[in-house]
Length: 149
Image 1: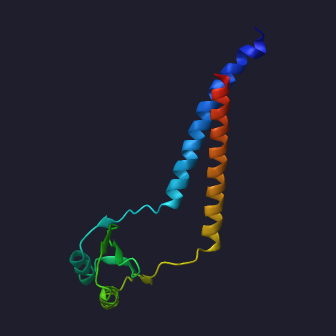
Image 2: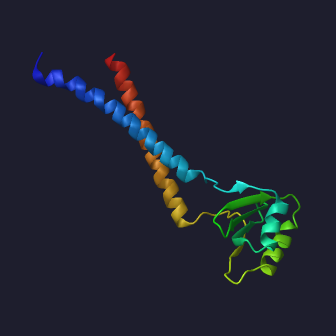
Image 3: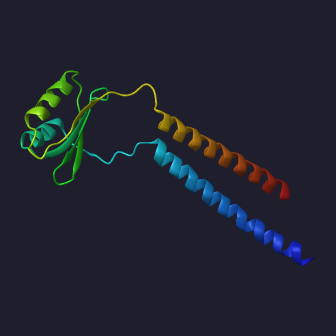
């Protein structure tokens, strides 16, 4: 047995775990980028309205298509609430405009976009390409590993 052949299995045995860890990290990063992590605490709508009326809201986003309001309090806490009645978005927007504090906050009435912007398309394409490359590399490694056995 030569020195080169003795060191080869060690090198190979280190590659597999490193590639596996790299693949897991890439998949996790892609998952985090693709799925919007929601860091808002769930609250009921009367609580949200009370906070608005008491001028404790720093910023708010009314998402009429999703029928959801997200608020950030002056103390930094974040809450969200959902509703079922279609006219609730207008009521909430009116309440937010009425209660606007001197320090100010933003009101954003938004709908879900049907078309993605160029940045979102680019990021999605890059993540998809990386994911496909990792899956191809892992499948090739598995085939080689099975052949070596």
